[in-house]
Length: 491
Image (cartoon, rainbow, N blue to C red):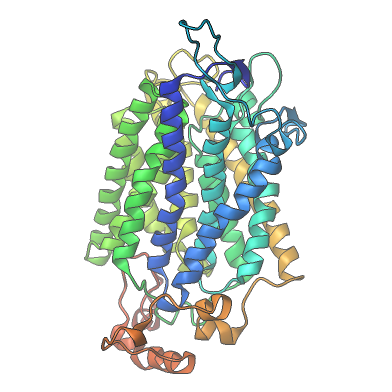
């Protein structure tokens, strides 16, 4: 946004598009809940969905109280916005705009604007980014984290980590005062829609939290398979649909930039899905539905920072590289021994890094983020040298290091005070029943042939059948017990 905020009358077309975009981004969080929920076991599906949905409650409250102010208030010490600027959205709420009426002579009512849209619409749009960033982290600690601890961690992490980082990346100077954050205004790294603030930020936080919480019981020898693959693909489809609000909505108005980012988002996502499937086919001999769903998300993640700075060829490169890189990266947890349950690190951290860094190579001079801008440069492959690449590297590295350090402090503080993990018995019997007193599926009441096991029976059933049932699913979930005994390292 070029001006923040001004007084005026909003453009109705831009306002309509941004309201739709905000709603699309909000839809991504239930989509993520389905995506994650399908990938866990039956006894964890409700908890997994709850961890995503609860972020909608926690983050919304904190965002309107002080989060927006920390992210978009006037810069204080190159760290965050002034918390008092928009505390409780003061000065932004409760003012209605009406168009001028020539017949009656009534003048248009002016309201606070950011660009050409009401400031409140921008508040709502950015709030949805904060919500899904927190929800993304939850996939790394599936099956084992206390729900109460998750809620408290969410509140602390979004306040200490996300709000300041969003200020660095998304808050631009208004041309008259040092309003914005240092990555956007001093470093001039390109991150159009959140590769650093959302995906790298959440990905490294997921890695730290998974390490601090510890491994699941039986991992990696016990096969832990997704219980509902159609649910996973439903979630991936909703994420792809909602991502148009995420990327094209970041244009801030219904204009050519929104149209271009819509196309590059689609192209990169398609390329990433095919890239993942190809890598899976070469490595495992099979192309799977879970691989297709994961490739979709990897492409969406990677194109997020780059969607306004690449042409179609660049989008193909970003998507294809991300699809292959993320497909290979999900196996790193076996090599290094960290239990990232649903591969948040392999998809979001690696995908975010790929998209952010590739801007320094394939950013095209004719794109909206580059054309006519004196503070940024085309990518290396377009004659821009290494200038933009080092900016992208510093921006990504800074977010990664800050998020890692701050998340470690928060996670350890909670671990040694209230505790992060459910006890061993509750984890074995199922976190849904232990934390929420419910189960995702009432098998006993359906009259079907599916057996409803008690906690102890379920454990015995898993042990008795694990070698017969264990399969490797798309390189994206845990390897079978037989493969582990044969010395397979999970890649």
